[in-house]
Length: 251
Image (cartoon, rainbow, N blue to C red; front, side, top):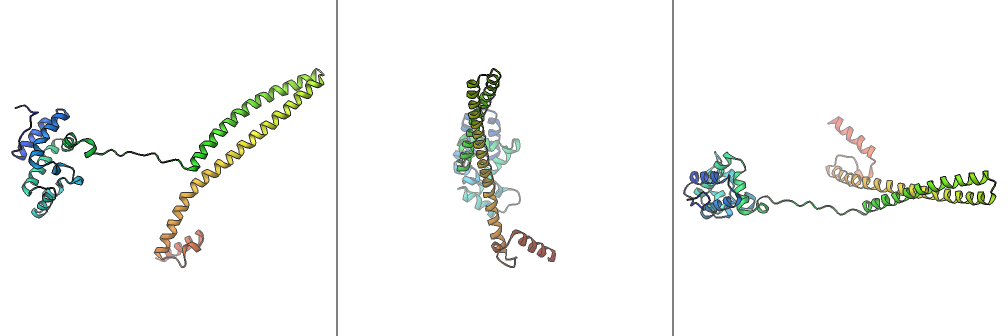
């Protein structure tokens, strides 16, 4: 008989030795080897405890026969079957602590034995969306400011040259261009500062929200504890701290 054939369960020691021998083989070999356990105990008892499988803690040394009987019955087994199953699990896990779980995974699948939790990314809040928009707008403004400053530098040079050459028309045109660019630069600066102020306010609101929630919870706890002389909601934080300090000093 090959190691990969399904073996009939005859005793805990015999089947534990069989599972240990198969452990180094492939998942498909493990699944086939596990079928002997399923044929003998049924599949439900071989699942983890939280899925209705045997509670191995109930069969540890020092446990009562009544407790073993109850745990076995809950898993759909007789007491003797529960003892035999836990003996197999204990024996193979002594060789490698996760061997029994590996056999469970091979037979039932990873998602059944160790379901992977999927972390969902929370939806962005309105404040987060607006902060991203502000960041994008400010980057565009900074790019425009760079171009305006470059053009302004050139316009000022042109005005200086026209004035030096005594070309009044060219000097006036260059001066007008300088004034226009300076106004554009100032507008961009003002817009950028407004956006910065808005972003600062949004960040403050984001910090204040959780702090407000925590404060409300604290007030509720203080009122339920009935340790203050009046309702906590009618007091300042300073008054609350003073009363709590007095109570602590007198306790």
